[in-house]
Amino acid sequence: MMGKKVLIIHMNQLGDLFFSLPLIYNLNRSGYKIYSIVRENLSWILENTGLCEKVISRPTRLKELFKAATELRKEKFDIGILLSFSFSMLLLLFFINPRESVGAKKGVFRSILLKKKIKFTSPPAPVNNLSILRALNIHILKTNYVGLLKIPENVISEAKKLLKSKGVKEEDFVITISPEASQRRKYKCWDSRNFATLVNAISEEYNVKFIFVGKDQNLAKEILKDIHSGYVIDLVGNTTISLLGGVLLRSNLIITIDSGVMHYASSLERPLIALFGPTDPTLVGPQGQNSVVIKKKRMEDITVKEVLQEVRKIILQEVKK
Image (cartoon, rainbow, N blue to C red; front, side, top):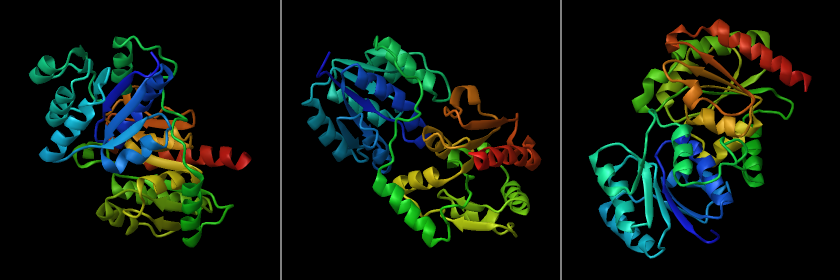
């Protein structure tokens, strides 16, 4: 088994990448050398698990795709795992021609071009990756992503330096809020006025500092304009994927919707409140032990009062530590 090679072609979303970490871990522990193809802006995550032999930026142009196929075909992979649903990535795996290829049974082309198909549970969820391991007869030692990503000391120092420049002291209680979902998943969002009301309510009871993270600066402005109390630091659009990890580590509490940032924080075992509407936390929820899930049929059914109650509990627990 030692020295066998596996190629994994990943999905594009941050949360889905975290779902793949137990897959990588178990393959690694079974003796496989793992080569991963992933979006360039997410490669840092895989590089800092220490589980991959090589992390390769996902080709985005036809010329790059053919070049990658030519180079990677020389590696003579024993297994190719297709997590992505991109047709171009299916073709890439086909041209690389691993001895065995496996992926979700979804669509006619995958049925033809993949040598081994597994049943796919929608939405993309950890259960699918565990099914791949079972299909390959890989012994499963770990089923969650907790503890698999290590934030380097230099990143931790960089985050502390940044937050210090924003007025955060070592003794401060810091709450980080991540309010946004990707463009195709806006149904996961909580009303911006609710986030503002929550910050105002917490500030009236506790002396804490808030950090907003994400990419959507328009959403951040919409929330921040209604916040009239509390110490708020706006880092939206101003953190790299690595620096975000340092900020999450420094946070005493993270409040987020169902998102990649939720899984990022959960993987680091940070205290977390996750807000769920139509998505199912039993399938795609946070995997850390320090996570609290508030689940309603619709996001608009989640009240500020409910979230505030959980915030009070966590602040009380953290202060006692």
